[in-house]
Image 1 (tube, rainbow, N blue to C red):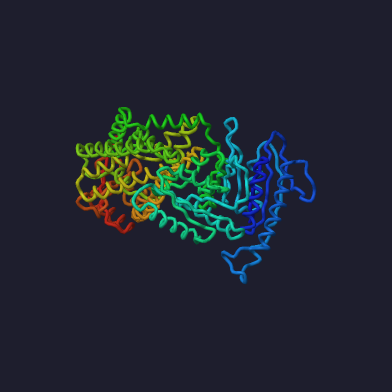
Image 2 (tube, rainbow, N blue to C red):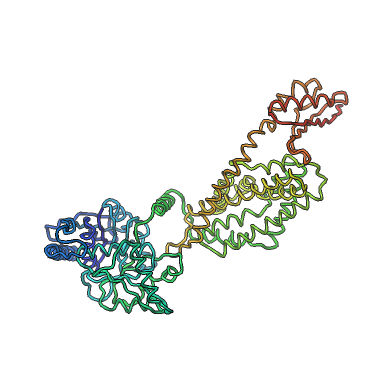
Length: 640
């Protein structure tokens, strides 16, 4: 592990070398100084020989500053203070002078080379300068800040003369980054007697100061830091947070260290814009923003993002704008959307009632529900709250409209029993969840790349949205237990499709480069995505129950198997074509499976009688271990 500082100019050379050395000594880790020069030349990197002179004035300043810091550290080691240790137990470990080295890199772009050095030297703390964008292009240190996983300090050097870190001000909001910064500061206090002032700003009110002291003591306790001669907590009561901190900082503090923005409770929201606000405050102040080491999940997200950037073609700005406009406009709850959802549901309902697969497929192609679901996925990766509200509104109202139309079609139809097409939607299974997930990915991919739009109809068929809603409405209209059970299964199928398509779309859009800005990340979007993932996991046992039931009953659904079982009995009636099987359940006898056998015969003499039907019932019931009633549906074909 090491402390690593990236230095780009003379001002940073003096400040970062001092700070880096003091922090490395406090942490008892080596110090690595990188002199980075981004210019229009071929990439070059070298280790600097500290025993020889250099023509680079910045490197010479770094070497001289290191020599001064070593001399000061030796003086401190010769006369240590005993705030945390008594004289007998103080360890030589606390007094060691850290090893140090200087490296020089230059080239057209230093993002990747410097990032590799951070990984190679196993940096535990990285010091970076604050740089404004040049000609609209962000400085390479901004990229490093977003990519590195170790603890990082971004420092805006003030106009005042820089001194050693002997007096630090640390505004506290209770977030993890501020607490981690306080821990690092306590190490400096222990190693060289640096004075630390944790500061809490309280708004004016009754007992504000007492409440603030109690909160600040709690923060110190959570950080594992104790109040002492060198660590003196302070509470200021004021209505203006930034002005309050700025006024206190002018009392002779060398550096103001504030934790990176956190979102969560009220106090963190008040402090959320503090780092950027302080950067714009008094230019004479030196200000550092401290971000603690990234969590394991954040590191995985960074690695996935990096892999996506290298592997998957990223959408251009124009493509992202067109995609947003397309989804935003077409997901609105308007006359066009309403007319399409009503027509597609009516067609799907008639297809389900007539047991026609072709008609049901046609309805899938017309249904507009896929668009707001994809828009919801886009809204989550963008953190776009208005778009998510608009999408959810269209999904919910679309579902209710389709449910009503399906119910009315069921009421008006002369349907006696639920058809096999309707029953099939009432038995969702685990593969349906995966189909919906992959369909969401495929639909988002095709929609974001116009050249692939021809594949969208196939995706619409794979991710059936309207047929399950129509099946739910028709099943409810029967007002029987069988119908209600089937309605529950069909509604579960639709819900599964919506959840997994949103997740699939979010994965695709994120992989294609559509992401929230680092400084504007919304926690609600992350929470919704996590909730959807947990919901999909919780759906597994529900779908598994339906799936196991389906597996138990699959034999009667296989036409080939039924033909093999029935053929020895049926063949003597000389059917003109292969038999066709349709199944459903009787509302009055839900445990009994009804099997309709359709066959074509050449005359009335060739129609099987009721005894044959009973014999077939016995054969199939014995095979699948379930009560089955066989009904023979003959059709006489007159041959000329």
